[in-house]
Image (cartoon, rainbow, N blue to C red; front, side, top):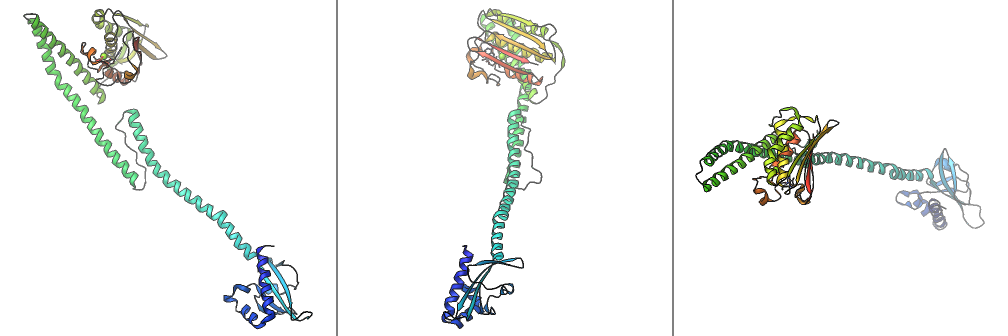
Length: 414
Ligand code: ATP
Ligand code: MG
């Protein structure tokens, strides 16, 4: 028995009990059911089934009275639970009242159905809409955040400070938009500073060129006219340092020109065999001092489209490094060959090698592993920085493999 049936039985039973005692009061309270929910589903009929008082449902009134359990009746497509009880005036009497409890199943069902619709359809729909709205809003916000991340990554990956954060079109003017604008302004400032700094390096190198060449020329003259060993030594020192400065300044100039995208590439068909020979020849004296043998192994026809003088400074620096950081009675091998359009040039020595902790840093400007040792050659630590910039400018790559105590190999691919 469900709750509905129990409720009807209870109401009918209460009416039945009261009707035996104070009939008029019961009729009255059923009739004025407004604020008495107690008998809201109950109506009373006489023994002939004629309506007296209570909830009157026209269709139901015509259904035959039947004592027993609550039953289901369908009238005009509507379902009702009906429960009848005959209340005799006195035991054994045939006079009395029919008390009928009626509840529309549909109205209850409708309530349940509504609840189901709310639970199963409307609530999920609201949740779905909220989720979609939230997703849309967050996606828009994340679009801005993603643009910021992408720009930051691009700047560090490509070393390109000219990149800016892309603005999301029609985006709300919120804090993230504000952040993008602020970051872009900051990048403008940084880029400006870098440009100024590059310009300064370039201007300073330029300005130094003339005085350095004067010092060099006059030092050489002093060397010629030196009266004794002491003067000769002093003049030699001046010439050596002036040469060192001149080398430094010309490297700085190349670097700053490449930085400012002003370095012109005078490309031509360069025979690597010839270039390697020139570079090796220029190092013979230095190599002889350490009894280092220099050898070249360049395949015939290794020709590349490149700027000859820049490529020569690349080779000279790599070979001079191999000699400077080579062991006495060691060797330096330069090899080059071309396969499938790619030219590979290697410079290999069996010198002191480079320890792991330095290997990534050797490309930095002014970075030298061992300041004291390098000083005897007037090294300034710009060689590899320049080499890397030149190779990059040619669209090539350079890498290094080294084992401390065993040797080093630089490999260029063009
Ligand atoms: P510069 O080339 O300006 O005269 P440098 O030779 O010291 O000075 P880089 O050519 O840039 O500068 O080399 C950087 C550092 O890398 C060197 O100081 C040296 O410590 C290390 N290095 C370079 N080549 C070799 C090599 N073949 N073997 C061992 N160490 C090397
Ligand atoms: Mg060098």
